[in-house]
View 1 (spheres, rainbow, N blue to C red):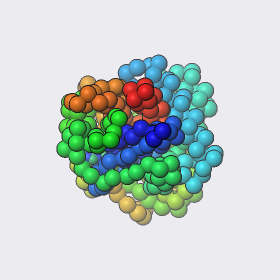
View 2 (tube, protein in one colour):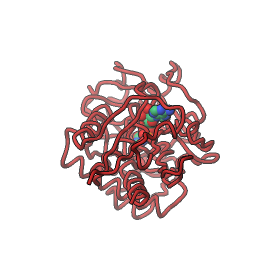
View 3 (cartoon, rainbow, N blue to C red):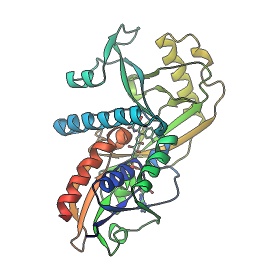
Length: 332
Ligand SMILES: Cc1cc2nc3c(=O)[nH]c(=O)nc-3n(C[C@H](O)[C@H](O)[C@H](O)COP(=O)(O)OP(=O)(O)OC[C@H]3O[C@@H](n4cnc5c(N)ncnc54)[C@H](O)[C@@H]3O)c2cc1C
């Protein structure tokens, strides 16, 4: 009996993990995507395992555990994917609010906080080199028979082909117009890449007051310095003053960490880049991710999987599993 076909709209990290999950469960999957990568989230993200609590604690805990286990397995079984487990040191100006299950999951230990921090900790987390991971995910999908079609669509109905039993909407910030969903908003972020010629082996992160979160994420061939978080801004431009401020803040963070060569950070830069995070929510709520069953105007099932905000790389395998469950139920 021929398997059912579904179309997945979006070839970001959310669309690719969803396509792979469905193909592994025997569904014939087709991915539609806009071939212009400019500003798209997944190709820009650095990325580290950074779960943000969202609005539903039980679902959040389940997703975080599931996604962590999957990325940890990929790091161990497929190092060529660009995923590796590595140390992150966090310097917290506010008191840390990690729940016990999260500290256990991330093997988190308290560190003596340097002034003026209130707490500090070290944990072991997936580091995901997206420039290797995205092509690896695409290769996994193609290996499972997933078809890729480069086409920009003007509506969700247009995305569903005549043979499709269901459409899965993984369009990121595109969902704002396509659904339409006014809760979806872009959040602009800028990054500086530089060669890792300092011998840094761990990553560092802080939560400085005023939302000025700063990080240096360490990958095999580069350091990624961030960040900026401009809610509502929807372009892929970088600006000089913002980039210089990132470098200054990152040097200060490494100094706080006690790294002796902090002042040499980013003397040479290999790349500056910006993109938008697909946030969803009201006010300062950014990760009200939507994984839900809906209907296309012609009655066929429409499964939403979007609005991952600052944590799409982190949670994509978990939301993909839920989206696949909903799809299989809908087409059974
Ligand atoms: C600077 C920065 C740093 C980040 N750091 C981290 C981090 O450390 N950890 C982490 O977990 N996350 C991080 N993120 C967030 C993460 O990148 C996103 O949450 C994630 O990439 C969202 O993936 P997505 O597949 O939903 O969206 P996208 O990657 O934007 O993909 C959307 C897809 O939909 C397609 N599409 C949309 N509209 C249409 C249309 N009309 N027709 C055809 N195709 C369409 C696009 O072509 C694209 O393929 C960061 C993001 C940025 C920008």
